[in-house]
Image (cartoon, rainbow, N blue to C red; front, side, top):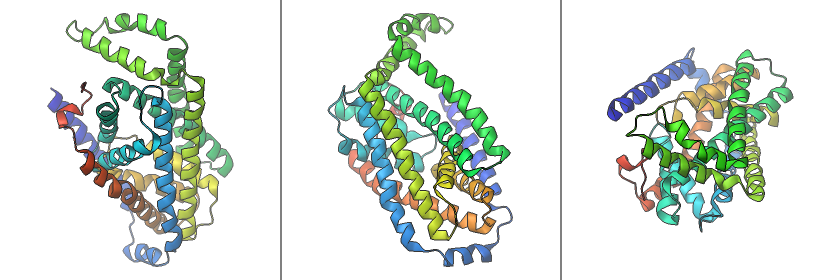
Length: 331
């Protein structure tokens, strides 16, 4: 059953990738595309490398703020885990890197695996909620009237807002939540209930990371700091290609890319990433060939920054057998 489910997931990822590759390459003009690349200013592109590495370090800082009370991990020890996880997610679909870095935290610092995954859930909810706010701000600042971007905002704000409220309720009333776990598990088969209850209790345990007000404020600060720095990276991209676009368009690109890469897709989000970048640049009035060139170059730099050092750390840390990366307890 599990093998069949994985098969369907891979098929969905393949179909999504093929669809977005087609949408990206429609009306492709090879001569115009090569002409765009010939005029690129490569010095600003080199500046992308330290900026992107800094965004990954902000991710490590946020992760540290969530686990500092319960492990001996430090930001500089978590930074290589972040890069290794991102490399694995780029090489293997369905965000395998998230499972992997949670496993690293368990194996190397002793935090229970489902608690480590609970922290990942917190990160994803915070990312979604903060990205919805960034998208709202960017649409206001750019004055973009794109129906597609507005529809994305209408869908994202209620969804992640509800998730944020649920997390807040969990932090404010953790005992009530724990008491209701058996009630939540009651509809499931009796053979599943003990295991499901155990997982939910451990997830609740992991989500307690934000119960401390200091940790919560640091986490929010590092979340928005990460996005603010990444927005600078996209401004450097604009300068490299000669686009007269400001920081607000970098924020819009950041938000659209973040929501687009939630979709199931093949390794590296090839096609999905490029199409998201092109949507923003086309909305800003950039020529289609120039938008495609910028999308391809940006994706190449991002993959090089993550996969290059990330694969080195993967080799150093080793890979857990595949059967242990599907959410099963490792301790």
